[in-house]
Image 1 (tube, rainbow, N blue to C red):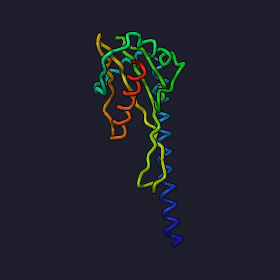
Image 2 (tube, rainbow, N blue to C red):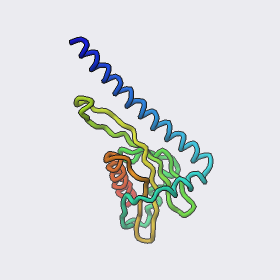
Image 3 (cartoon, rainbow, N blue to C red):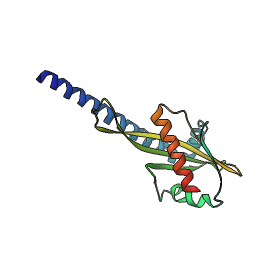
Image 4 (cartoon, helix red, strand yellow):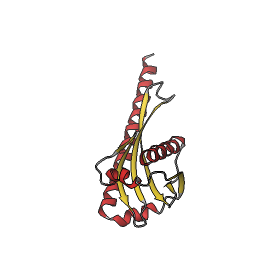
Length: 161
């Protein structure tokens, strides 16, 4: 029985260690990206060109929506619901690059009912036309990633409308 307990505890330690390492990697990668974006704005322009997947669209109902987004653009405010806008940049075409992170808490079978946190890096471009907002991103990696992107779109649109 002690061998089995040792194996279970060892597997749990490996699982937890892996999750911690993945979260560290995500945070470090996000910080590295932000450092590059702050150093050279053309990096943001090139990075934003990769976002072609439409996450959501919404009609513009608040003509003063740029004022509600301004504190995030200036870095005075970072939290938007469960999301943290780590970096915001106005692009040459008037759209906005938003680099965000989100903590996703889940109860998985592998953790035997214990909640675990995953940090997700989500990047968006908000473009506007005369009549609507369009939020673009890159391709999602899994269902959680896709859901988080949709959740961010809902929260962002609620905030600016």
